[in-house]
Image (cartoon, rainbow, N blue to C red):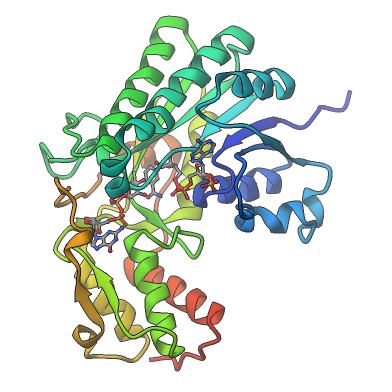
Length: 337
Ligand code: NAP
Ligand code: G4F
C-alpha cells in the first residue's frame, strides 16, 4: 500500500524560520500547512516562491490557512482540519526590544500561544509531535559560560519571560501527558530572510543602501553586546531532526562562537571594501534596551551527539551571504575583496 506523505503544520510560516522549514519539509516530501495571519499589506514574501508556484514540487502539497495565535478557535479548527503528524511552532512576536513596548501582547503571542496549541493538540491530536521554538534569550543574564541545556534561565525581557513560560509548558505537557514535545533552544540565527529590524539584517540592508546611494548612515544601539550567530537554514534542519528521534527532548542549537555587534559591522563593511565604517554608523539611544543580554554563547554538544547536527556556516561566511544578498537586492555590484 502506498504511504500518504507526512503532514506538518507550521505556525509563523511567513517568518524567517517558518519559511525555511516549509522549504525543507517540501523537499522531504511532506504535505505542508502554514498558519498565516491577516495583514493589511502582503506578508507572504518569504513563501511566495512556494505558493506562487515557482517551486513546482510544492504544487498540491503546500496550503495556507488564515488564523491567529491569539485566537484559540482558529487554532483548534486548523489543527482538527489538518490533523498534522508534526507541528512546528515558530509563530511569535519575536523582537526583544519591541517586547518592552508591548509586553502583554508579546506574552499572549509568544508565551500563551504555546499553551493554546498544546492544549488543543492534547484534545484533538495528542499523538502529533510538537516543536517549541525556544530561545537563548531565556538565558538572559547568563549564569554560566557557555550555555547548555542545564544552564538556569534568567530572562531579561518580556519576550524572554514569555519564552521561559512556553518552554516549561512544552516540558510539562511531555511529562504530564506523554506528548512528544521538544524544545529547540536556538541561539541567534540569521539569513537574507531575516527581518530587517534585527541587527544583522539592519546592518547588511543599511550597507547595501549606502552603497546604492539611498541612505547615508545606519543608526544602531549597543555595539558591545555579543551574540552566537548561525545560519538559519541549518538551524531548521536541527529542529526537524529533533522530531525524528525516538524520544522527545530539549536541545541547544548554536555555533559556540560569539562576536560583538561591532565585529559584525566591521566585517560587513570590510567585505564591501570600506575600512572607515565609523563614518557610516551613528549611535541612537532609542535602540538601547532597558535590560540588555550582554553575551550569549552556546554549547551544542548534545545536538551533535544525539542529532548528528553541527553548524557549517562560519561567522565570516554568514556576513558574506547576507551582504551579497542585500547588495543584489539593491542593485549594487560588489568587487570581491
Ligand atoms: P520572525 O521572522 O519574526 O517570524 C515570526 C512569525 O510569527 C511570522 O510569520 C509572523 O507573522 C508570525 N506571527 C506573529 N504574530 C502572530 C500572530 N498573532 N498570529 C499568527 N502568526 C503570528 O521570527 P523567526 O526569526 O523566524 O523566529 C521563529 C521563531 O523562533 C520565533 O518564535 C522566535 O521567537 C524563535 N527564535 C528565533 C531565533 C532567531 O535567531 N531567529 C532564535 C531563537 C528563537 P507575520 O509575517 O505576519 O509578521
Ligand atoms: O538582532 P537583535 O534584535 O536580536 P536579539 O535581541 O538577540 O534577539 C534575537 O535572537 C534571539 C535568540 O537569542 C531570538 F530569540 C529573538 O527572537 C531574536 O531573533 O539584537 C541583537 C543585539 C542586541 O544586544 C541589541 O541590543 O544587537 C543589539 N543592537 C544594537 N543596535 C540592536 C541594534 N538590535 C536591533 N534590533 N537594532 C539595533 O539597531
